[in-house]
Image (tube, rainbow, N blue to C red; front, top):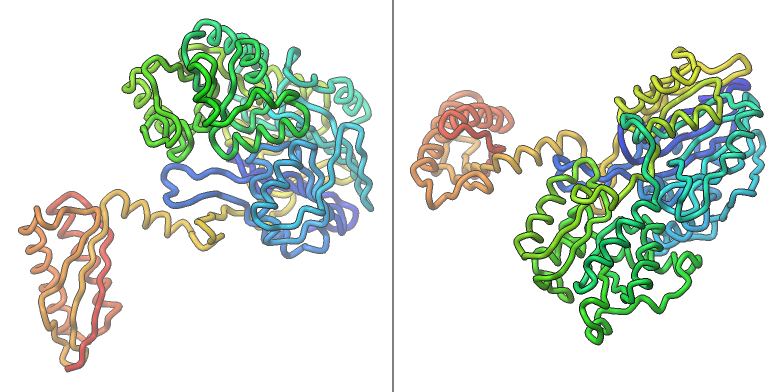
Length: 555
């Protein structure tokens, strides 16, 4: 991609979407990759486990890859690392402590090596042949979050990572002084996250959430409390531990990701006293108001602990009428209906439920709102701006905010995946495109499922499938017996015998008419699909997927 002394910047994920973040900086024979996340499937992406990046360009330029640098430990930034390492060789992964711990767990689970991981902190500086990197501490909902500063021969690039400005955080305050210093030294291009670019104002402090949770613990001191939150929000977990200690409660954790988060927080001394945690068997020795159950499932995931508790299928937790359930989270876009289903089931069980809608301080975003995005722009003072990490409406709004902060509109780039921003001594401009697309992961299969397969799955999920089995003599061009009709998800055969009989007769009519011509199995199948589709739609108003199966029988 690179020519002469130019520096190229492009995204393989994270533009026009929330998730699968991956950004690349290339200069001559060096490529630095920033983040390798996954995106979780939408409701209509049936059977899909993860959505990841198309890394064809990285495969073709394998020898240029020098490092993968991770901003923080959320799944949309580290969840794709195992897939990436199965596709290309990453010499070194640089990650902060919490992110490194989470990545190691992922790699160990997949029996993949971990000896290429290096831990950085705010004082680390990394020198490559042409580029060098340093880090700025930021505030986010997971500890050890950083902005990345890349010094290139054509100027400095700052990637903000995910951030907010919180003056009373649970962890360290963002290093605003270092941001201002880097800005004063001169920044050519800012890559700024845009998640909350549409929301005016300033995000609430994490300390406000702490206060709200503490109030509920005091108010509900006679009940057992079941609390669901993001396992990755380790600062929230840290505060829950402190709140439980103040209210003489022990904690039982459920959910693999919650267990992992707890272990990492204890290992890295974010939680200093591990004796507050007990297992489910020990909980029997305590009164109900001495227990807090901390679990996964705040997004309504069907297999998560809270969903199984709500369904009455959890092996170790049975709801009691005076239980108190707290959702310390907001539904991620696309998860609203799943969360509502779980909440409705909990209400049917007669328990009390607190959500962020009933109490506005039970969750706060880890992403800055408009005033915080403007503050970052003012601190960094970039010459050029490329919004990242967001849907296009968010990216566009972020460009509007940048213009209000003095960055000319023609110095901002509303890019799509694969669009290349080129930096040289004269400035920045769009020039070229690299291959970038969406890759679906279905079980152990990566990239085998395309858009047409998803359309077929959507069709089958909506109107079902109808199979016509035909016995045909290819020599005599005869239909030997009447068609056998089988359906799944379309109609109940036993209750619709008349319709099945009509479909059989219509299929026989289509086949016999077609067999009068020169016999061709492909043409016959296409004709059956065409005519049966119209016939069934007229009869039922539905369009099941039609699969003709031809058995050729030579008498």
